[in-house]
Length: 345
Length: 258
Image 1 (cartoon, chains in turn green, red):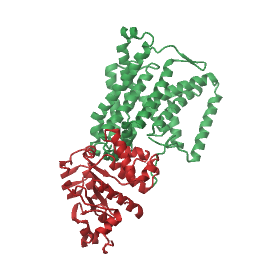
Image 2: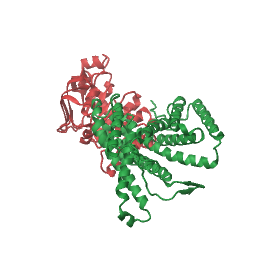
Image 3: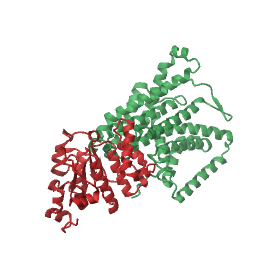
Image 4: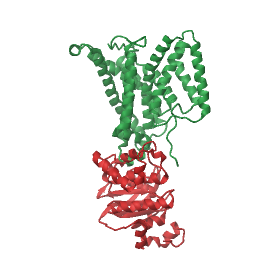
C-alpha cells in the first residue's frame, strides 16, 4: 500500500525494457500508425485504463485491509452502474431541474448519479461485508481471515449478485443517455465528452482517496489496520468497524467506476466479470496491494489493450490484458511498485 | 539496597494507593491450546510490577488477555474497579489500560509523528494530542530529533522508545510493557528503564514483563514469577532477588550480583 518504486534487479528492468521496445516496434510497423491514431489510442486507453484502475484500487484496498482478493468486486461495479442508471431514469424526466439549470442540466443530473452510485454502493458494500463475509471471520478472532472460505464466498457472491441483478433489470443491455454536451476538441482531436469525464472524475476519486488516507485521522486508522490488526487494536482502533469502512470505500469506488462507464458503453448485467478480470490484471501489473500502483497498472493495461487491438489485431481485444499480466509476472513478479518498506532489524 | 536502586534509575518514591489491576483465576490460551491455568495477580496504583518467567510460560498471554487481544476463557480481570475481560480491545484502551508491544511492532511505513498520533487515536481534542506529543518528546528527546523519519529507519532502541511513547499518547492509567529490553544493548536498556521509572514518578502504573530478571527486579517494587501458566512465586522484588527458587530457575543458580 505504501510501497516505493522498485529500482533494484537491473536484469529484470533490461528484459522488461526489451519487451517494451519490441512491442513499440511492432506497433510502429503497423500500417495504421500515424499521429492521429496514436492520439485517439492514448485517450481511449487512458479513459478505459482509469476504470480498470478504479476497480483495481478497490481490489487492492480490500486486499490490504482484509487480506483477501475480493472476486465479487466486478459485481459491485455492475450494480453501481445500475444504481446510477436508476437515478438517471428517475431524474431524467423531471422538468423542474431543467427549469432551474437550463445550461448545466445534463451535468448536474450526471453528478447526482455518480454521487448516488458512490453512496449506495458504499452502504451496500458495508451490508455485504457485515452479513456475508463477517461470519466467516469468526474463527480467526473476528477480523483475521482464515483459509479459502472467504475467497470461495466471493465467487459465490458474484454469481448470486449477477442473478439478482438479472431478476431486477433483465439481461437486455440498457443505454445510459447522459447529456453531457458536444465532443470537445483537444489537440486537433474531437473527443466524446464522456471520455474526458472518465479521466477527470477517475483521477479526482483517486486523488481524493489519497488525500483521505494520508491527511485525515480515519485514513491514518485505515492505514494502521491495513498494516497490523493487532497493533491497531492496541492503540484503540475499532478494527471490525474499520474493516467495514475499508470494504465500503472499495465498493463505493467501484460503483463510481460503473456509472462512469455507463454513458460510453452500455449497462449490462454481465459487465462486471470481464472488468474484474482486467482490473485484477491491472492490480498485478501495478503491484498487488499498492494503491498508486493500481492506478498506474490500470493505465498501463488500458493503453496496452487499446493499442494492441488497434495496431495488432482487434479480434482478440480481451486477450491483451492477460498477456501483459503474464509477461509482468514472468519478469517482474512484484509488479511495477511491488516492494514493501521493510524493518531494518 | 534502595540506595543502589535510586542510584541506577533516579529517585523513586512509592506513592501507592489502592488496587488498579486484579487478575483472578485467569484461564486462557490460543485456539484450543490452554496456556494460563488460573493465574492470580494484583497491581497497586503507581507501582512497578515485574512479571517474570521463562519462554512459553504465559507471560505475554496474560498481557494479551488483559488488553483484550485474546478472550479469557474463565476468571476475571478487574481494572480500576470494572470487569474488563469481556470488552473488545479498543474499549480497554479507552479505560486507560494500554499494552506496549515489543519494538518491532511499529508501523514501519509511517513517520515517527504519525506512529505517535496513532497512539493517541482515541483522544478527541487536537490540543490534547499535541500536548501529549510534547510530553512524549520530553521523555524521549531522541524521537523529537527523528520525528519526520519513517519508523523503518529507526534503530532498535529508538523503536522501543517509539513503542513506549505510543503507549503513553492516550493518557493511560497503566501501561503493560512486553519485554522492553529485548535485543537491546545494556546502555540503552538502562536508559529505557530510567524512563520507565520516570513514567511511574509522573503517576502511571507499570507492569513490565521481562526476561532480563535482574534489571526488572531492581526496577520493580513487586514481582511475580509465572511457571506453567500459574503464578509460582510472588513477593517484594528485593526478597525475590534472593529467593532460592527464583535464583535457581531464572538467575542461573548464582548469587544475584547487585
